[in-house]
Image (cartoon, rainbow, N blue to C red; front, side, top):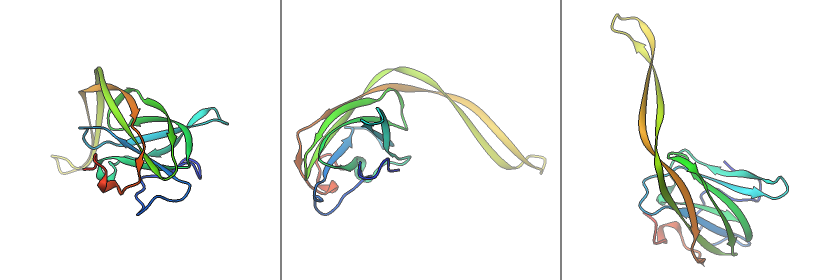
Length: 164
């Protein structure tokens, strides 16, 4: 999902850096497949606007977004983890380079997550019916933080040291 035209492009991997474009790689060391949501602060609206929100892990294990060169304020969260506080970071995106951002998870305890599963089909008596099963699971809750590393020259995603 793309927020506003010209703001950012979702998970990109062109053969070479595009003109007047910088890139940001979002990755978390040792984390399993993550479903990323990234928002960018919109100065005129004075609020964050969603750039990407994917309910699937990106190829290569990390998310790459394209931005126009310059500074931007980003808010990062992970949709398939319980996040108490998303990460916010100000980053300077240089033309033709990649800024790696390391997202770190800090456990803040655990929470109970309610689950509900609906199913349809035949019953034991041979009739068609619907069932709803309720449950709960205990899961960890995290605060996120983000650190921007020094910019590096553009490379394919597969060539990055943190690619899987």
